[in-house]
Image 1: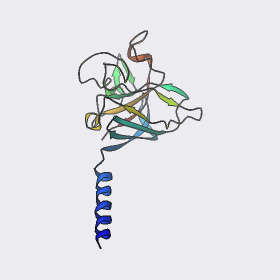
Image 2 (image 1 turned 135 degrees about the vertical axis):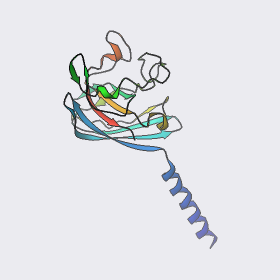
Image 3 (image 1 turned 135 degrees about the horizontal axis):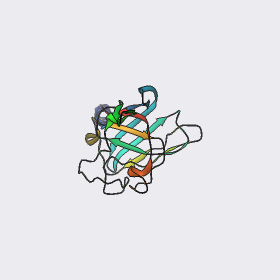
Image 4 (image 1 turned 30 degrees about the vertical axis):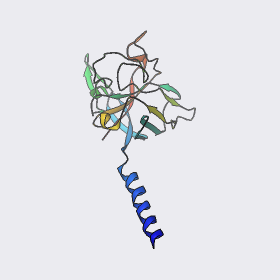
Length: 174
């Protein structure tokens, strides 16, 4: 009878730990100057002792490296700039709570929302997990995740914000 009680207590403890884990799933959508469209997969966000674990399960992207960031607003919509509608501009800029104004990548001291480059395979999918040491789920909840058209050099030179170019996919972190 003691083993049964011990087993039940262990099972309850394990179940509670799984339920209490800080985790969110973000549905990512294609975006363009007309707005938000088709879903392309999900990104799982999980807190760990080493930072925020970001696990993509995405398809339908252009192969290669893409800029990948947490943006300040919980909005993937278009916004007008210089008389032109811009995809995902309602998401605002990179999450930068310390107002550094610098784009230095996930290991730098700039924007907190700078994540490692998203690597997309030749089949158009991205599944490689990454850990962003400076972030926790509580800090990014209520914001958005953005995928840019091009690579990110983690610098503001020769182009601002790593040179990633246009915004092509976005998801809301709830």
